[in-house]
Length: 114
Image 1 (cartoon, helix red, strand yellow):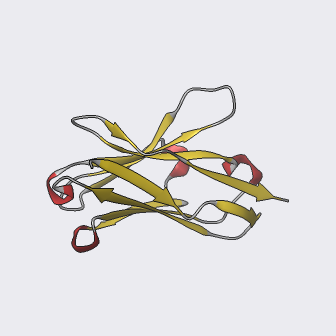
Image 2: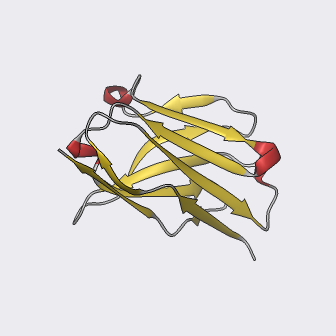
């Protein structure tokens, strides 16, 4: 079955770090560009970062550069998102997405406590 499964969310302390994982099933992960999105309650999802099939990277928006790191391991069919240091403003649901054709994961909740 073609799907994306996120993991690594939970409750973490402000100032700490977090690594989210997104594992792909049922398609040729190494051929696809991927992305991480963040969604605040009542808001639309917005792009955090995307990564090309071979690992070329862009982070978006500029305010997240240096704090958000996207990476991938094609041998493990897995993409990662590391955030450090965490702030309470990182509390949100995080989704991974295959860019084309569009495929979304189910999302993983991150709650940062002060």
